[in-house]
Length: 442
Ligand SMILES: CC(C)(COP(=O)([O-])OP(=O)([O-])OC[C@H]1O[C@@H](n2cnc3c(N)ncnc32)[C@H](O)[C@@H]1OP(=O)([O-])[O-])[C@@H](O)C(=O)NCCC(=O)NCCSC(=O)C[C@@](C)(O)CC(=O)[O-]
Ligand SMILES: NC(=O)C1=CN([C@@H]2O[C@H](COP(=O)(O)OP(=O)(O)OC[C@H]3O[C@@H](n4cnc5c(N)ncnc54)[C@H](O)[C@@H]3O)[C@@H](O)[C@H]2O)C=CC1
Picture 1 (cartoon, rainbow, N blue to C red):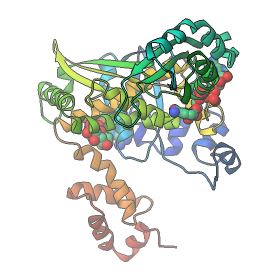
Picture 2: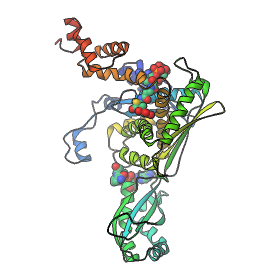
Picture 3: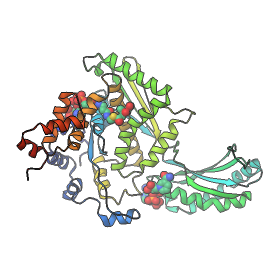
Picture 4: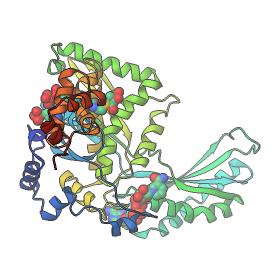
């Protein structure tokens, strides 16, 4: 495995899957088991699936693609992406190709600090209850850490206690809410289970200190102390395309950013585009993508209005993009060391820490967004997206084998990417071609 591996794999998408495997083997030293995993031959076995979840009746597959061309902080990354939607992987690779020519992404991530919440009720006077909890901070920290001494040895564990008094919501009980936050360094883990253990562990002492009653004890997915950020800076002239000057493309991207900043209806779609990339990478890398989603959307409305997670503006002849969002990821825990597909994905990703993984995901999100808003602000999304979606349309209409590409091309040329059109094309084929195209020639 070479440190200087390049993610710039021009024409990778034109290779057959076998050729792509050969290329990956050469570059990353993947062994036969890894390749068998990619080919689905040694995919997640039912026996293991039965240990992972309840009522297991089988396993479920998704296409796995490789996001290419990514360069972050001077290092190249190949990003495995598990996703069912056409054009997502192409879009990340496309955007990353432009950004690397402009110097690549810069990214950074906070320390892995998470929040565990304990909800206290019937505590009496909130000021007095708060005072007692704050006074017992050292005892609470020691108690929390006693449930995970190995985390403390690693340099993590519960680092601080905060008390929040929140106004009572509408309803019959008028008591303000008293919420204790455990501020926990989870090191290389996403941390949910260990945080929950600590939150449950300190609850009896909190009840004893305040005379109150604890109800919920659980982590917060609004991981706003564990943010990842990525930026890119592209000379405007590099954006020229579709017979349009770079200035016009940059203007379209800037207008997309303004639209999303002003309007939650647009911001939701803008952020969906970002999550196209992040979720796909998260699924492949065995991360809890519901936790990432929940954190991202809660963070997006932190000032009271739902806003975009990324912004774009032009400065000194450069298009500047920025993204910032919570990123609670792990290199250990959950399915990460168990799922065989995740093992291969991690070999391909070559990240050494949860922080590094967070930076990669942030850059993937920004790349995905760049590709979408570049298309949306110029020729529209359908041109690039529908060209790739045409293959799914052809399959839906009954095409099989090599005929899928042929029919997809005919659909794009006809400018009519619809199942009815694909059926019409298939029905118009000679009997021999029809049989070949629909896989019914025996
Ligand atoms: C689709 C492209 C990339 C085509 O763009 P293109 O101009 O045909 O690409 P190109 O031929 O210039 O190729 C440049 C690079 O892109 C990659 N690439 C190019 N083609 C392929 C391919 N077939 N398979 C794999 N990779 C591909 C590949 O890395 C290639 O480098 P090369 O290998 O040539 O050195 C472009 O039109 C694009 O980025 N469109 C946007 C697509 C998009 O955003 N899709 C997301 C789904 S839509 C959605 O759900 C979100 C949305 C839109 O609602 C979000 C929002 O509203 O903000
Ligand atoms: N609201 C949410 O997001 C919730 C998520 N979950 C699930 O919890 C799981 C994540 O919980 P975790 O506690 O992260 O996983 P986990 O319960 O598998 O624990 C990870 C363990 O790895 C060990 N470890 C070894 N080396 C480590 C290192 N260098 N740094 C840190 N820990 C190290 C620690 O003992 C730690 O407890 C995910 O599967 C998630 O789906 C569970 C409940 C709620």
